[in-house]
Amino acid sequence: MIRELEMQEIEKVYREEMSVDFPPEELKSLELIRRLKEEGRYLAFGNFDGEELTAYAFLIHEKDDPVYLLDFFAVCRGGRDKGTGSKFIQELFQLLHPEFWILEVEDVESASNEEEREIRSRRMAFYHRNGVKDTSLYTCQFGVNLKLLYLSGKEVEENIEQRLYEKLDALYGFTFEERYGDGSVTLMKPEGLCR
Image (cartoon, rainbow, N blue to C red; front, side, top):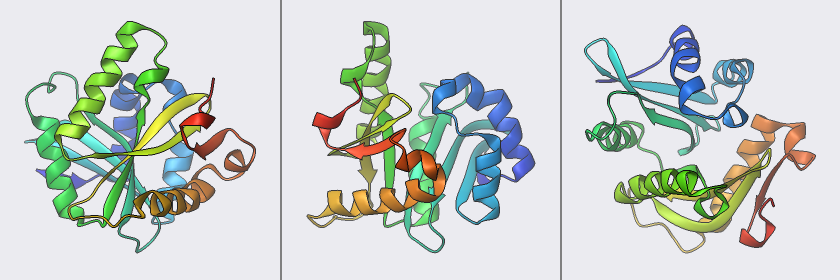
């Protein structure tokens, strides 16, 4: 069963799951998540088996806009490799009826070692198996290169990359604020990747 998480539940997921599932440099602060949620720009959903959380997804969007940035997505420890993630991502996508989702996924080519490269490759393969499409766009956030992908339930017109760029430009503006302007967070083509 999928349901939207309240702020108290978000805080628990953040402390108990996200702090383990994501590197510290990729996590947004709880204060930022709380502010965006209060502004109506942040959604958090949990997938539950009874009372047990099996997966979670956090999304950013502009109010009343059918385009979402999948900010965080993970299957909880113990529930991986059982199809939970695929089922959750597909059901949540249907529940929200977005025009499309934008995803930021760690760039495989920027991995610092073979183990990290393998983890990133598996993550990318998971998204591709679930209908996510590649773009030639990247973002660099605080020194981490992320490839931009998208998921749409319908055929997307040819100018998808321009639309992704415009949507992310707006989302990053209110999410990262001055850090987007000072170069800590950038949107770019592959030749501009952080080195």
